[in-house]
Image (cartoon, rainbow over all chains, first blue to last red):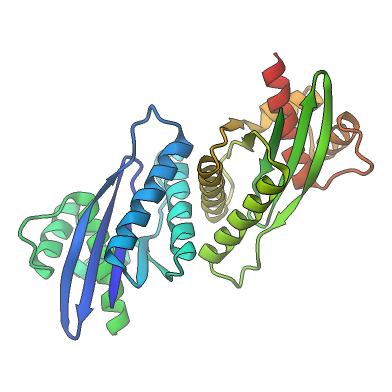
Length: 157
Length: 157
């Protein structure tokens, strides 16, 4: 079972592709999708996000897509941009016939750190350890990998 | 100049295609896109919305897309669904190389009724009158036609 986790951010989003073989879990790839500069129109930025994510899915061929649930952002404008990105990501998954699963931020933290209110550094460190990564992933990639791990963990239970 | 206006709603959205020839303005088509039932997954509903809107644009070939700005909904869940729909609509416009314009609800009302806080019945009645429609359009279609009229009005100024 191979899944791609996605962490949405208004400036950059993270992705992480993780595979489970029996009891073992491997990291296939991770990284960030930078949203093109604010100077571009929002529609262009959404399209570039869609195209980038599509290329990642075509390259790594995950069977399922995992997205962190949106929480209410402090800033309404940011909340709407996150909503647009999530809509676009879900549309892409559907167009590629991949099922979408969502988990709350606290479910994801609990799955990798055992505590729903863990801080970002803890998540990064545990993701590195669980997946035996050569370096600590960036914040967004770590959240994306954590979402993928949370899903694989939930599937196993 | 032919434009399509879109009014986003969490249960049903409206569309309205309007054309300006010199000083005259004609309504080409209007209607509603029902979001498939709540029993379907959100990703499937977004995909069906995208496909439906794509079919309308391919049929009527507007040159520009007009969308009402989102305001903060009372219900956070509804706000996110509207955000997803708007993201999907903007992505579609970009994929079809159509520029997207957005106006606030009060700008749109002002353009058709002359008053930014007009009620829905007033908007429906004025849209019917301005476009000489044989019947009063439904609420969502009227809002979509009003958005298109607002854009054509703004262009003329």
